[in-house]
Length: 212
Image (tube, rainbow, N blue to C red):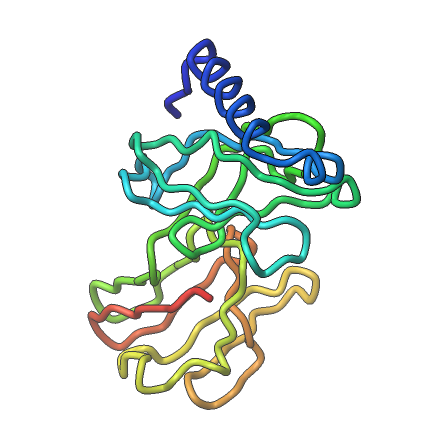
């Protein structure tokens, strides 16, 4: 991945810190401190284009603690994230264009120093494409680490050619099968290569799966 020039980054971080500290009153600085977050960011396996939105969340917060927009393709930040000392050590999570991103390092946390965290994101729904009838091995993208609950899918959004999804349950040493609209053993699709799937279709089609 393309790396940010270290000298230029250091100068930028120092300037941001000086300007930010000058802009915050002493009462705020007494209870909180900032870190600068930055890194490389890919979207669907390519450098994220300008305009890509990055949200950074602290702990279990549902409101982002910091937001920035990519201006140089494949890079984001530095962006300031403020929190008080009680949040020290809490996890940082990222979204790219509203979807959870995979981070490198894997488990960043809010600490005393700046955070260089590289991101792998996905752009919108995931589409499985099938060229003909048969069994096809599929997986959700590595950059998606959530789960899709099959029971919640609208049958109208599942192509008629899709007959079901086979999943190998390693601990049980058996295959399980999910049939659209009919329940079945398999209830969720997991991302990030947690599971591999065999999808049975009767003909060529595309299955668009919304990733929550």
